[in-house]
Amino acid sequence: MKLLFKQRFFSWFDSYDIYAETGQTVYTVKGQLSWGHCLKIFDARGSEVGMVKERILTFLPKFELYVGRNYIGCISKEFTFFRPKYNIACKGWHVAGDFFEWDYRILDRAGRRIATISKQLFHWTDTYVIDVCDPQDALPALMLVLAIDAEKCSRND
Image 1 (cartoon, rainbow, N blue to C red):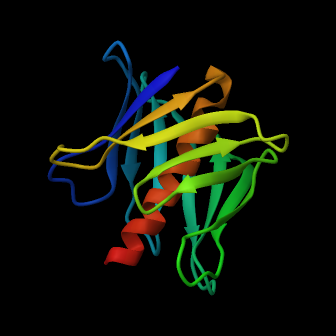
Image 2 (spheres, one colour):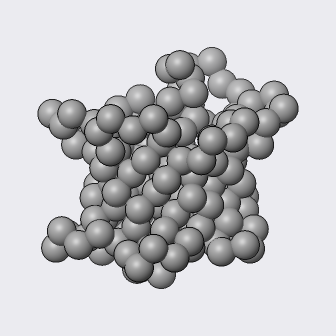
């Protein structure tokens, strides 16, 4: 299942549309006014299905992931000098790849691919393709991509 992750043009807060390969909207992400990033995820019918919330007052960026109101894990940036590295406490997953170019993979404990994320060039706004192996993993994979993107945006502010 491929998802097209596209940031909205001219948005005051983080705002994204997530499309299927067919062009149908699968998710809409709306940033909320808060200390740190708070991204609420809505399905195509407009029902809230998840949230990515940045914890503030931490030494390094940390984001909590919620499906509905249920906490499913977190992702936090690790201290490194050159290459960004993340600690994921969610479903036993980890992230591997080139974060500087935004091409990376989400893998399970055994090293099997959950999703591949790649940035598309030559767009007005940030646009990524999330290629998810199992459609049931689409929402958690999207939440990890949102958290990594939010952390990168915070670094560039």
